[in-house]
Image (tube, rainbow, N blue to C red; front, side, top):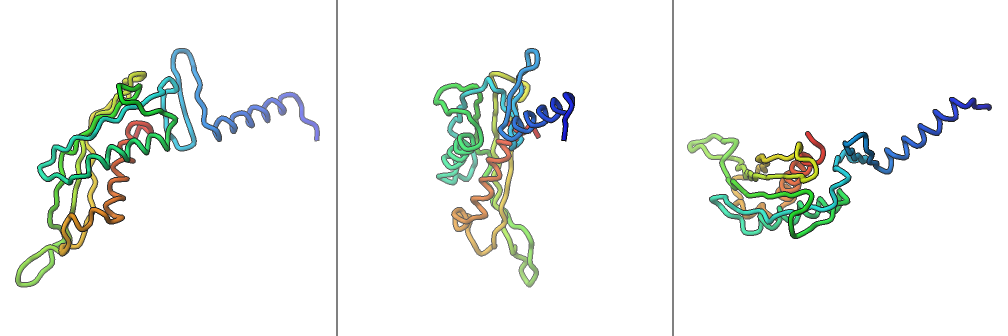
Length: 184
């Protein structure tokens, strides 16, 4: 089968484009840089370092390991999902956070002579400030909240090691990451 010159160029261009998509790419048009990879993560290619400040616990109820857990989970996410290198000082990308609320409240009332809750809800709200020294248009400061429901006959400390609790923390970290790099 013969290809004319236009067909060959189109074919080669398609292969090159698919290669960029499959391996991730970055390119520059004028003064603007763009980055892309298959995960949908967009990071300015000029950004090489990231700093994650220790999350401060400002909630009225303090879960002793929560601040450390959130800080380390965000660092792990950055290392596993980006090419950024962590730094102890100010980075090209910076995260600061605080735990604003750690609450439990009754949900799903159940009937009887005395109305009690069948489920309780543990909610965590964290405030995050994100800054990008190379492209400040994506900077943000916002709250993220996630919760987990658990049986009313359990204490919050009983579920802190559960897979539901760990999933809730993972979702909080994913929310922070997505807001910074997926631009939702």
